[in-house]
Length: 117
Image (cartoon, rainbow, N blue to C red; front, side):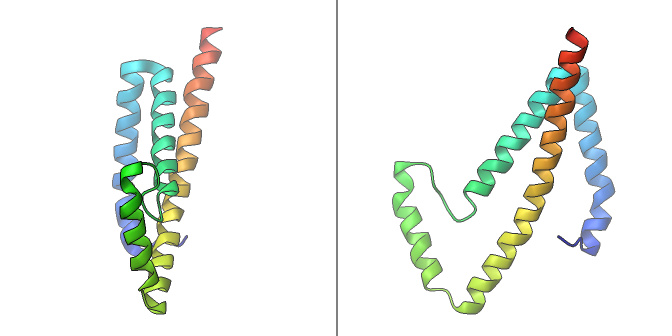
């Protein structure tokens, strides 16, 4: 995953907001709050990855899934390639979110257990 110029410009803001969220979560609930925040981020990232090709989870979405499948079949090769490239790019960001999630879970629950003993 290559970072674009916009990614480099927005990176300090993202790090600042993430730091603020971490400080607030730690102030409110301590290390346990960091672990729960990590679980939340991980579940959201995993859900987005599972549903990258369309809705998957509800009996009411079967017609929606069929319509998405038909629309994908009607795409030209160029449109299909563009869709796949965009999906790969977004999955790269999800990979970063899952790594951050794992770090928060390990840090939060690890230090919670360490300081509780």
